[in-house]
Image 1: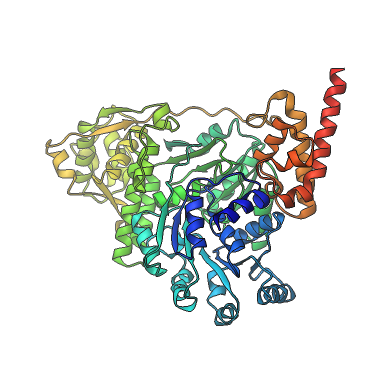
Image 2: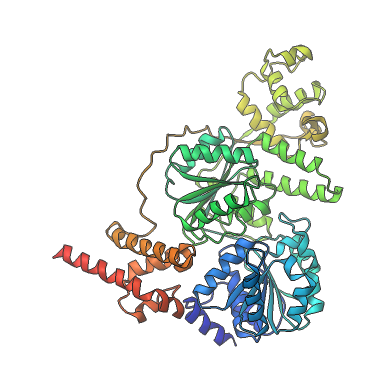
Length: 609
């Protein structure tokens, strides 16, 4: 049956060969075996269950957590001529009835459902009466209570093992460490399932982490040459999202806010603009992005820390799905560390959950402060490895300087101790700098031996030292005492001179230049002489996407348009040979694109004559 899968890969999807471990996964599903599939974002997970669903008898059932994700995947499949539908609350009752009729009469290849809809007894009864080819549980990390994106409804999916024996089940995710993978297998009762771990590396993404000095200015410096590129900016609070979206709009960007405080209509409208239009930047809380399949997101920026390495990896994975260069950029500071630890300490979760959340946060903070290849450290967190330094992260490109911070650490720890471990970072630094503030005078801290002993360094430098001591567990903030700094067991060896500590030297902040609105930069790899053809093809794609009411990338990805520019197909057979062009897309779109190619060829020849 794998030969049939290869045939469909070419005729339906327009690809000449499988990538990575796709063929192994598909072969296991075709043989009726269960599987846990871990592939990086953009690695082709969907094909692993779509092809078996089209080959095995019956309908493929896909469990998906978000309406937007279902809509995107079904829209794309219909463009390929695949008989796919979804059932959710966005459909009218007559539309739902028509889909249920198609399901009952075995006229569907794939049906997408949210877990809560699937687990309704009425739905399960309907599925009992049809043949199921495969059950795919997408975003399977949602089953993990200790993961970064837990969904309560996923816990009931273990019923599928008992309800549909003999139907192969496949759990898929891009983000799961060893602990989460074990939990997926256990909770979904995937006993004896084969595990296909394809690795976590996204070599086209450049990772950059900076100490936060002026987040707005630092963000503008990043975006200075990205005026017409699609991107996502993540911030922790709704207020900051609105402020940043306004700032970017004032600087000439098409920037839209997205957070839970907006109406559903406005959120949907902003998400649609991001998917359908070029060069839109969405400024969002973590509520945005999981259901987005947009391939040409050129950057993901975090102006605040996420909660874990898993959350960071999932969010940055939305960049560069097309394989072209992309940027994952983040700034963080002492307040981020304090705020996130307070959120964990003040949550109503059990102590075990809090302990795991603290460990995940500490792992992320440690990753931020590494002094060797950032990509290697990221992959090691997930149990993956890289033979050599990547050459495409901030540390490889600009290795950080380190310095012996033992004396400064002793000064700071002593100051925390002598002020009674009752004050936050701002006051402790004021004492170190010898500042004459009302709070210092009221507490008589000008009389302390540590008052003014840090005058040789700036407040920014002391915040960096303090942040790094917290990351290393030499200090902690007490949420129950309004963020008061407290010593830890790791503080004593430093204070006693039994250990030395080496710290990163933060580079000086670069001043951001004002962003000037410029014309669209030429796309990657397209020569200047071919820009007229490139733009003509893009304009046609945009028009066709509006007529079909789908995002432009559902018609053709940029990579396919670039092949058109490079190879100049002149016949239907040559057009069908392009990557990403299957028989249904040739039938629908071949003639209009071939017409544009002929017209541009005539224009070029006339100009040459």
